[in-house]
Image (cartoon, rainbow, N blue to C red; front, side, top):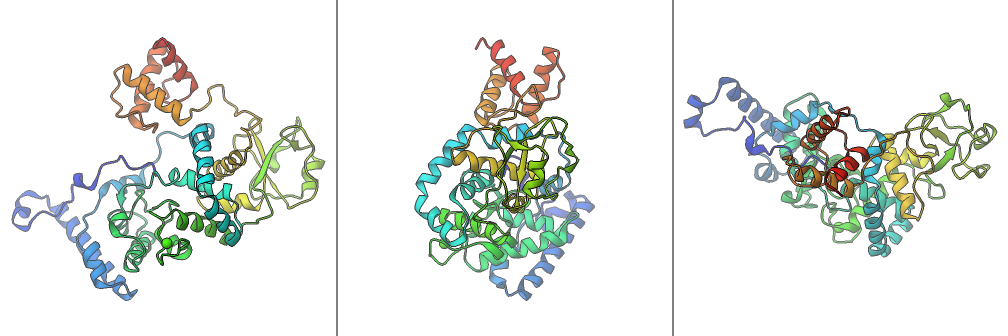
Length: 410
Ligand code: CA
């Protein structure tokens, strides 16, 4: 979802030049790469035909694509900056997203009620996924899906996987669910309001507004129902919560922590675990596991099956916790009782934008103050940290924000 700013395919060095110009101007390796790509597309065309996708669909939308090498860089890039979980959550579950989510619950109340009736997943959970995946449909990703997936299907180290996703995209177009020009997404092919991969779309997308098309780009009812269908098929238990925050007694043996290590509630009660507000844990109920996302000194949670189901949407515990926590906030719940173990907490999106405005005012060229902390913002932060004589790690946290505020006289 946050990949949209990286170079477009227009800058790709492997452009297929007109034949007459080609021989003199293009390096032999680039020519070979172009030939390989064209041959790969020919093979994909044969496979598509075999799967019943019309030749017209392929020839109209896929035959002339040019590879976008920037997606290969993203496939192999290691994040140079490891985001602490408190930064991750501060941006995903901020007051702005809670307010937006509550407005969406209100706006789509009737649809969400029918979605819950049919799939057994409550409105707050569905809206929380929507909010984290695409900011309620506002951030869909802007890369043409067939270009990204065509490139990844023919180049790089996961071609088998992406070949399937490329063919699934063609199938979606061939079946008339979504117009080809609306099929844009992340560099890796997640698209629409639910950020499904194309193969996930074919398995789980639902037409809920009854127009005969499964449209996860422009139909909110289809998107909400498809999210609920995904969770339902993952084993969602309607009568259970995802879990809750707890408090551990002093000296608690944290080696039992781990999402897969589910134990009966009696075990946790016997070990002295209590609800975060200090009250006793509910006795009985399903087995739960102890989650310590920031170690023994940070917030602790007991999580159940539904946490695993959310995890299935995007395999990261920090992601599942963001959805779970946002859903609680949408139901009126508060922030975590135990603070994150840091003396420099993370920033909301509004605070990120403020930080960027302060950096711009000090002459840093970081583009627009959009709240996205990219390489240029980090570099500017590191320069300011250097001036302040603190570790120039480039991290956007409360401390640098406060320092810049006071330098600006705010
Ligand atoms: Ca529909």
